[in-house]
Image (tube, rainbow over all chains, first blue to last red; front, top):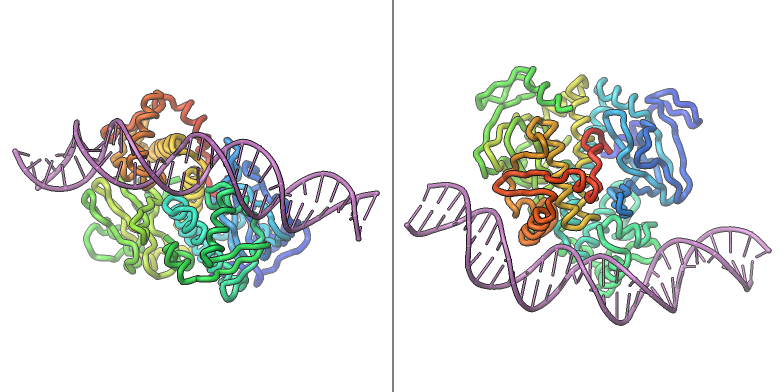
Length: 232
Length: 232
DNA sequence: CGATATGTTGAATACGGTCAAAAAGTGTGG
DNA sequence: CCACACTTTTTGACCGTATTCAACATATCG
């Protein structure tokens, strides 16, 4: 499913700053805690994640922040079809490697069809489903089940990217990040994590997640991984 | 932007039940309060809304429901790239006219490229942005501003479809529907609407919305319509 | 007209937020 | 290696928004 990355790798890409070759792609790398692009920018680029952790988020006028997605290896970030100000910001949490793609050239490539058009459409459909499930999560689950659902989704996505095994994976998010993902406060996230740990369901300590009782978690969160594979 | 509909109209479509001609498209019509397709179905179709109101929603194991989108004229509903069980249900609120499209034939058409591939990618990108903004809305706004934001978004989308003018439009949603859109309870939606009316901000009565003080609404909700035109 | 869905209101409750302070962890430079 | 600054985590007390439960009013529709 993450053939988008394979596709990129199988085409000529220049590592330097010159924007030429296939799709005007440039391989780039960002330092931890740096901002890749900012909401409102008009740079007309988009990204495909090669490795590392990133946050796609939206800053709200009232000072709040909503994290929209935590893209993983192979995910396309910031796709749009037309020129215009960027809707969301992307920040690197860890060292982050991406393909930096020209929006215009990519949309032209979609017009040309072929495997690339397929991969893009597939990714976009999948992202739609993920965002829809996030909506259901925030809108209709309480703090416990909401948090559980998030870590289950994360495990599934990381597994596909080969970054999780036996219900264990590294996760460099802070509790504050988590709060902005889940629509809670950092304080309440802390209490919720404590409770999940106390109930022997999952532990999140020092950047490491362990799903202790995956079965119970799946049941209480009503987690159904199908949306991650398909689309709306 | 809603050239997808124009595109469909400019190609041969049969009105009868036979699935043939361009993309295997069939024009269909649904009665008010009927269910167009149900979460879990494996029918491998998708829809493009021609007219009428519909709800795209997800039923949760705990009995809850989260409405993911209220598609309007020209919107594509239920897109996915691969076969598999449907993620969400679609129900008609009013009489609903749609193009019923074969998923397989549509994805093949994307492979072929051209204007259609562009329109699909554009629609998907736009839906991504809409869902992301819904996330921010539910996750980081209180009942008042959340409700205000929804009605502002709806006005904007209906305007584009020519179904709203001077801050007035018809909206057949019940307060219960509204609750499932906004991640609130019907009771609280009722109180919130009362307050919005009392403050001379907006009124929602008998299926009719009036944005009384649009300027104030935009300010308090931090509404920025740009996401509706572009993508993430 | 009666049945059912939708809207409205009140009172009590609970879940998560706010404020504040301290503890633990992390990184930097002297 | 330690001192210092800063971020992140943790906990307590209190508060407020939204939920729950229940009753009644009002539309809507066959």
